[in-house]
Amino acid sequence: MSRLYIKIIIAVTFCLADITAFASDFIVEGYKYFLHQESDGGNYATLMRAPVILSGNIVIPPSISHEGSEYVINALSVSAFEGCAQMTSVIIPDAVKRIGSSAFKDCLNLITVILPSEIAELDSSLFENCINLKAVNIPKFDKKKRNNHARKNHDPYIVNLFSVIEVLTSSDFENYEGFRFINIPGSVKRINADVFKNCHSITSIYIPRSVEYIDRFAFPESGIINEIQVNRKNRYYTSSDGILFSKDKTKLQCYPCGRGSKKYRVPRKVKVIDAAFRGNKNLVTINIHKKVEDIRESAFEGCSGLESVNIPENIKIITRNMFAGCGNLTHITIPESVNEIEEKAFSSCSSLKTIFFDGAVEDIHSDAFIDCGSIKEIYCNCSEPPGIDSDYFLDPESCRLYVPKGSLSDYRMDENWNKFSEIIGF
Image 1 (cartoon, one colour):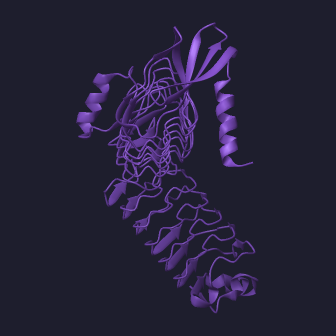
Image 2: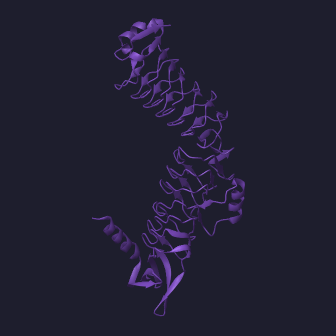
C-alpha cells in the first residue's frame, strides 16, 4: 500500500472519531474543513488542509459558519499545514483537542507556535523539518517565571511544553533546531531516554518539582547544553552549578556535555556515578574520591578529550562502555577491588598505551579492549591469569606482558595469555 493511501486512511480515521451524525466537506478561503456532529450534539469542524500559499502570521479562527450554523474547530488533521513554507507563526484556538501527525511538517520558515492549553499529546513528527522553529508557547504558562528564566539565560527563545503531558518520550524533540532553553511543565512526571536527541542548539533545561524519574540517557551525548536547573521543591532531583544530582546528592546523574571546564572533581558525597559524563568532549581530567561505590554503564563514553581519570578502590565491575571512545586516554589503572570488566568497557580507546591490573580480575569479557591498537604494556598483578572471553581483547604480539615472577609459568601455559610474544616477571 502506498504512503499516500496510508495517509488518507489515517486522516479519515482521525476525523471520524466521536462522529454520530452527518459529515461533509466545506471549503472557505482556500481552507478545507470536514464538518460533522459529535456525540455531545455539537457542530464541529476539522481543519483538513490549509492552502500551501499561506504566508506570514496565521490565526486559526475558533469557529466557522456554514448555511446558518456555527461549527467549532476542534481538530487539525494529518498534514493540515504540511509544506506551508512561508508561514512564520500560527495561533491555534483552545477548542482544538486533537492535532494529527505531520500537521506542520516542512513549514520551513515557521518560528512561533501557540498551542491550545488542553492538548495532551504531541506526535513526534508534528514539527518535522521545521528548521527555524524557536518557540512553542502555551497560553496558561506562568509568564513571570518564563521571563525570569529568559533574563537569566540572556535568551528570548523558550520552549514551553504541554501543560498536561505527564511523560516525555524518545523523539519528542529529536532533531529540533533553534531551541535554546526548554522549560518542562509542572505536569511532567517522567523523562524517558533520548527525549532531546540531536537537539544541538539547547543550552539550558529546567526541571519542575513534578518530575519523579529521569532516564539515564535522557540528555543528549553531544551538543551545547551547559546547565540543568531543578525546582528546589522537587523531591527526587537537585542541581548544583547546573549539574544534575539525586536529591540527597549521593548520585551524580548528569554533567552536561556542553560545559567547557577542563577539570572536574566529583563531590565527596557522591557514591554512584551514572552515565553522567557521556559525550563531554571538553573534560581533560576527572578526579573521583575513594568513597564512590558504583560507576555505571557509559559513565565516560565518548569523552574524547579525557586524558586522566582514576577508578576508586571500591569499584568491583568496570561496566559496559564505561570508557568507550575515550580516544585521548593513554593509561588506566584497574584497582584490586575490580573482579570483572564487561564488554566494550574500553573499546576505541585508540591512544591507550599502558594498562595496570592491581589485583585479582576474574573475568574480562569479549571486546573489552577492542580497537585499542596502541597498547604497548600490560602490568598484571594477578596471581592467576584472569578469565578471558573467546573474542580476544587485544593484539598480544604488539605489547609486553608483566606478571608476578611466581606466576610466570601459569601465564605462559594459559591458552589466552601465552599468546603474548614477551612475558616478563616483576
